[in-house]
Length: 268
Image 1 (cartoon, rainbow, N blue to C red):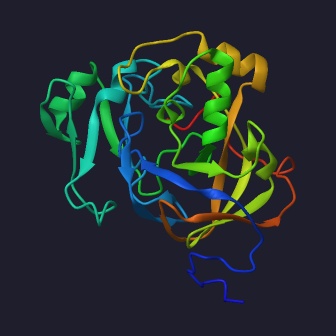
Image 2 (image 1 turned 180 degrees about the horizontal axis):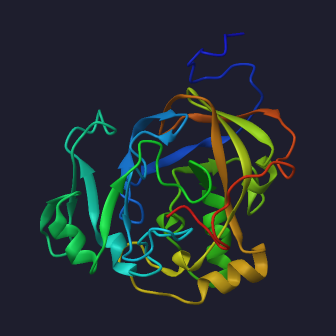
């Protein structure tokens, strides 16, 4: 059996398989469009380059939730950030392409001015997360909630870092992983809690159109939760196609005080 630093992707002897990685995403700027990845390093602070930049609304500096997100501007998800040096995301210059096709450096005052009066940008090396640094959802959950609302839904509506194709037959298999440690490629990820949803799930990630009927279904059928949040136990590289193994079960975290952000917080 390998040491704790063993980056083996096959993860022999670490538990039983629960699926494989179907897709990976990061969000260089909080609440802007996702960047699809084939593989990525995951550190103690989540996916490399994920949500390192964020825009703050005017007059909200002392607020518990000062961020400009798709709650205020659904079209924010149509702004497409990218790294000029993708292999060095935490050190790279970051640019943003607007829906109109203009391209700005993320810190260019002209971009902040386009987003609103008094809006300003900040960068945090540890990432700007509402709750925890990693978010995960399964294809079965996306299909399951789609069946409940009566239509196919894009997984990006739920803004996960990891989309998992689960082997379980149930509709929402990741609920059973809370309290467990997953071995995903070279990463060990603890599944800490279910992901409480907010109005952002009503925003179509491709068109920015609103469908106000989605969140009420999640509230009624799923106690407002869909997908899970987690944290890094061992940093490592994850790639699309990697197996997902349940390594061990840990005690649930109800007794821990974790900053969950405002009611209905979600990774934006």
